Amino acid sequence: MSPRPAIFLDANAGVPLTPEGRAELLVHLDRPFEVLANPSSIHLAGRNTRREVELARLDVARSLGIDSPQRSREIIFTSSGTSANGAILSRLLESRASAPRRWLVGTADHASVRDWIPIARARGIEVVELPVDAAGLINESEFRAALATGAALLSLLWVNNETGVIQPLERLCSLARGAGVPIHVDAAQAWGKLPITIDAIGADWMTLSGHKIGALSGVGVLHARKLETVQGFLPGSQERGVFGGTENVLGILSLGAAARRVAQRLAGLSLLAQSRDTLESEVLARIPGARIHGSEAERVSNT
Image (cartoon, rainbow, N blue to C red):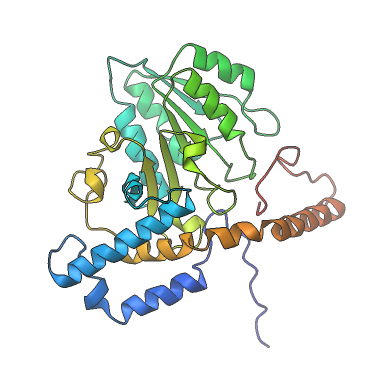
């Protein structure tokens, strides 16, 4: 008796490697000395690898609404979304006499951000935790009040990784910009599920995770408008001096392939939402007392 095929329902934690990504990796693995050399090396194989890394960087930039090869330099490859968050928080929560020593962060934000709260407080930084309502949305009146007293940094989770609830990001960012508060957006769960145009959002820093869109695990993305604000997080010459160490070439190539499929993913979201709604209606009908967290708010289609 053959086993039943598996049904994978953990795509918020990690999407399986895309067929296109797998095919691209196999091509490169078949000629490893041509493409998979150290991209910092100056010999031919190293230069070929560097070219492939930069093409992947451009693919990622385009998936985020950046179509300029020059501006693709704003994209920094890291080892994960968590390390991308760390690059921002470790640098921007340092003591700075010129900035209010306050950090605004949501009570429902991801652990990779909230784990920095005790560290920030140990550094003497006031942490203001922004409450959310029953749907998981940030309370706007308290948000405005927190902005009014200034802050060195605001961290916003665009899409909640547990409920799929979408924060009204453009509105919140507009309010923060009006108050002169620098903005960090964790967009890991939004990538491939919502259209992203970085310039329209206007955040100073955005972090993303490759395995959320079908790349290999172990590669993340940091977008920084001003690289000097995060340089030196992991000392080294790689990744514009932000994230040192030899790049994860296979992870980056798989990420470029996955980024090229983002538009295709977005096109299938309405069908996915129908499947989500059918599943939820069956759960509610069959399990007395069940309820769907966040169902009263706008959510991404896969959650």
